Structure formats: C-alpha cells, structure tokens
Image 1 (tube, helix red, strand yellow):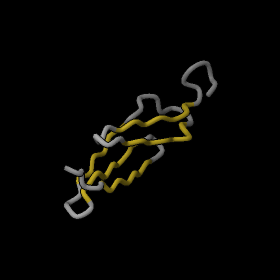
Image 2: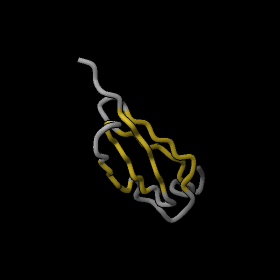
Image 3: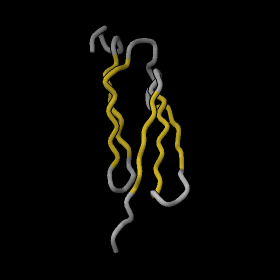
Length: 71
C-alpha cells in the first residue's frame, strides 16, 4: 500500500517557536506549535528543519553565547 503524499510547511519566530503543519494534501490540516529551545538570551540563527517519512521532526540551530561566548 502506497502512503499518500504529505504537505509540510514550517514557520519560525525569534525564539525558535515552530508552527508545523503536517497534513494530507486533501484533508484537514493539523498544526503543532512548540518551543524547541531553552536558552533564549542571545542570538540563535541558521535554523534547519527536517521531517522524515514517519513525521518525526529534527530542528537544529546555532546558539551564540550559550557555551563560552562562541557559536
């Protein structure tokens, strides 16, 4: 049985809050919003998001000054 195609979109804010929309293209959308970081007092850049075929999400980013003042 072939799995139906999935539509995915991602929205982020300065605090790495992500709105993840995981939906079958012809069905109702499901939106999940979650904060993925704990350290927010300095710059957090270069965000990348990946989703696999089981809808598991991986989010990575650079966080300045979290460890010894460097990226």
